[in-house]
Length: 128
Image 1 (cartoon, rainbow, N blue to C red):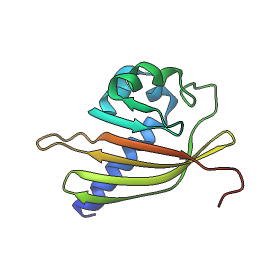
Image 2 (tube, rainbow, N blue to C red; image 1 turned 135 degrees about the vertical axis):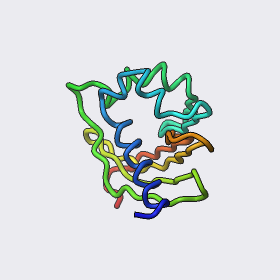
Image 3 (tube, rainbow, N blue to C red; image 1 turned 45 degrees about the horizontal axis):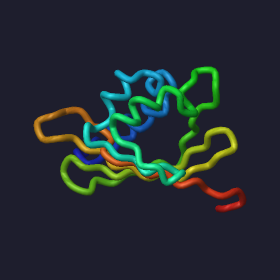
Image 4 (cartoon, one colour; image 1 turned 90 degrees about the vertical axis):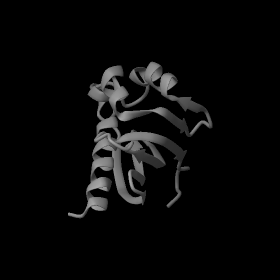
């Protein structure tokens, strides 16, 4: 496995961890995966920052071990530059299907991949 393939796999592993209710419900575990400069543009159009995401994620959908879980599909990634990976994929949470894009980065001298940016777009029912 070359370095770029390994980088993509590490970003995918981080993305999958962020879908785990045990991680989502823990500010500490989520904080290890989100870059301090993290920004998300959610499906509602709302802008989330590192702090707002850490404060609200535990109460968000997909964060309860007893509730519905994110079901990812079509996940693929590409290295945009050394230490920068772009992932695209879809999720299903209950009946809601969403197309997603995230950028993961690893800062120089650090071994940890963290999500730097995320965007979610709900898919209207009946759309391919």
